[in-house]
Length: 427
Image 1 (cartoon, one colour):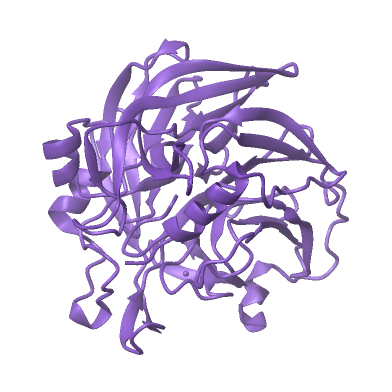
Image 2 (cartoon, helix red, strand yellow):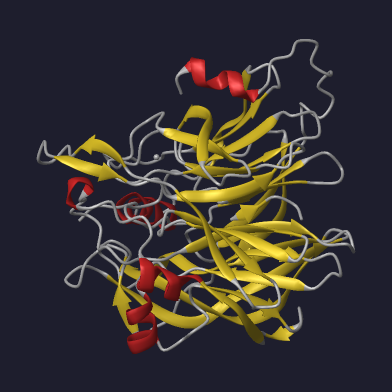
């Protein structure tokens, strides 16, 4: 089996041994550090930046790692996730006890064991009244969740009863259960991928609009609406696989979409990015527009492993790539990249060579860009602030929107399903 665990493991070992640390550019400022697998970022009405931490897993119980199969490596449970608040230059972990699973690995020629590739709390949003909601991933089947982990919060959207102390959760929508019952993206044997297990759910990102949350499931390859009162979960869209060639066997397999982020633009439509699964082709990731008919149409393409994106108020697009080069064959370092796509379609690199395993971006009220960095190695996660060089981009003079990207010729973390993988747009 092959998924992103191979590159994350190699990179984690290199970092622990002091090899290959990323050097920050002068335009960066570290605003938080020592985080446990930082993922989604969101600003509250109090002006604070909230960071979701997926945690560092634990020791038991354990289930097969995403995409690994029953004989592969195991990820193990611990209530080690949390939420950190950054306010007035101060960093404080305000909520603890969130569910987490992570992969234990031993550093070669040492007695040191670390955990990597955590799955847990992925995204946080506030409704119009300031009530917080949290999206918790899974990266497995609801059967393993219920029978082995026995932690029902995995794979669900939940309401947080408080943002302080030990987490208290109220279930809102069970996306993992929906996947187990329906498996919406099943396209039959012609799209079989031997590196997938079939039933797999990993809710990763959402936004709130009105009385509903709009959620992407990176492993299920689909898009949902969930009423915030818990009364309804509705499938809106499915992101189908594409045919690809297995580099190991030469056979035709299904290249999974792996949707990772959702945003709402001024035209009222939803936009969803994809990471793409094995064989992790360069330039294969796209951004879809989803209109009133809920049918995804390609809006922009030619990206690699999109983990997050957002629009500015001029129609420009910020795109965060988890890795700028394909995850296969594994290589280290494989830096992430932050891009700006101007309203006329011009692409500019904001960061290249400074980001490692970035997992989310958020546009701040100050016009700067905030990025979760080193998101898959617990204890060394960061939040970086970029001084935004495009905050003052002039209004476009030509009627050229992002829909022109298709002519430029432009699929995430693992296969059916599974992203290593936040974030949604601002509510």
